[in-house]
Length: 461
Image (cartoon, rainbow, N blue to C red; front, side, top):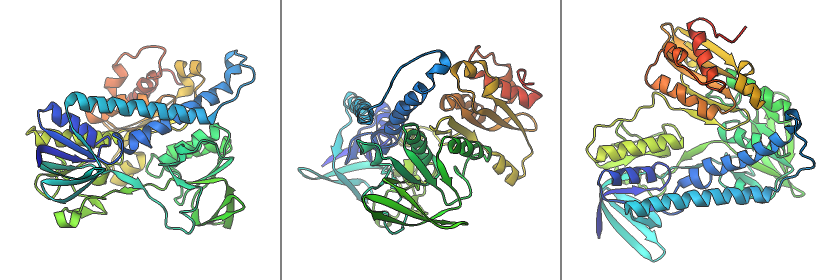
């Protein structure tokens, strides 16, 4: 029986990063994965969806080229080739991760892994069972899409985010159940490609955990583009009739039927503990997730958990950060996981990004705060790009220390990082305001918003 210092179950962005970091720190590592390295994020989530979104953005921009003085003539797109490009990007990235493992000499055991006792992983491979003895176990089994318990949720044509991008043809009409991050990214992309999209959300607004201003603005934008949005609406049933799907919903207006070719279930994800006998191991659970401390240790000595199974924040970058912490702690380093400044990004059009506290959270906590907003319509680079929709919003305490930020606008996913650093380090808005920003650039909008915390933005009447 082979023996390792670290055994990791799951090769997603938490598990594979943990393995690479542990190897860097001189530990002997083995990783067990039933699928390809990269997990949901790389193979079915973050990367594939962003590849499609980029194709959709190109198509959207092509419809607007006359505004830039360009005559493009007749144009069209090939959805199947968009999917081929997505598959090629995923394949190349997976090959890259596999090469990193070969370089680090980390063995990957492909098969179904199971943990029933501390210090051991049993793996069912194509050639038989393998038993691995490990000093430290890291559970990184991720999460799976949640299927709402309504009649018809398992019908053909009703799919989750794991499989909708395996389709080679576009539906004419698509119903998306769920107005969160996943649902709205798909809604934005498919609408740009000419699909008639309907979003159904049971809560009063889209993006329930965002700063109140963001879903209000985004809802208006999506409706103007022709997306039908139903909030405060419950799904009662999904039916099939004459090669079409009928989503039966109920709201204040009563029972309604929405016809479509496909239905996307974007109702969140649930912790995946398959292969982990939590009860037999004695793992403490809370709401179906494994309880961990700031070093990613579970209630059982020498067993760690990282990523979605911890129920903290189901984000790839959080899983990777947790993996780094777990590896560091196993190697004897003084490390600790902090959730003080976790960025969240939504790749709709326009993009949305946020970090730290929201206005409603500060009001609920009774914290006195200042607000400053600077619109991209007053930013020179945004005007040049033709992307003036949105704003940079900064929240700070009475002394000017940055507490949170929300950005809706061009390249928000990249711009937010300056505010992430501000929240993480407890910077005063004055620091950002007095830092020279290149001109003309989008980050100047952050500088201007920081000036607003101090008094007033310079370039806003």
